[in-house]
View (cartoon, rainbow over the protein chains, first blue to last red):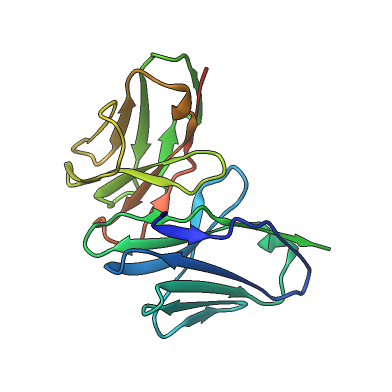
Length: 110
Length: 112
């Protein structure tokens, strides 16, 4: 079983739609959680950290459920520029290691 | 300020050859990590170095090795290249190796 599992998609949505991505992780010792965005043939870039209390950054909302070992990302009012691969990332305690999911591809269409 | 810089950007090698990839972290960052990303997958952790010491190693064969220099730059070496080593190799730097990673644009290695 993969340590971090994501539905690879692709998710094809129209502009303005709301889309949600989910991710599960297997290591209960995981301490830190992130969503990264990766554009085609580019490096991953941090989109946002994820906290148990949930956090929001503009159109993006991330949630963490430690009991279910589940992480989510909600994108509201999708833009064409949101088209990318979204990587769910966990980091076990005191390791400095990032464990990436396979990524979920989002394609926003006009 | 320069971000994380990696060289070369692209590389083509033949099976059995050796390759060295280089990474310069953001100024002031003391930790460098290496990741391998094959097409269609997320990056996979190879090594982490902090203050020139290896702090962690992923599930990669001994053909993979790395080191960090006094100026905190790093090299990743891969011996006896296999076709399956074809991937995007990413370097990430952080202040202390525990959070706040910034990735370089990567080296795209093709083994033929």
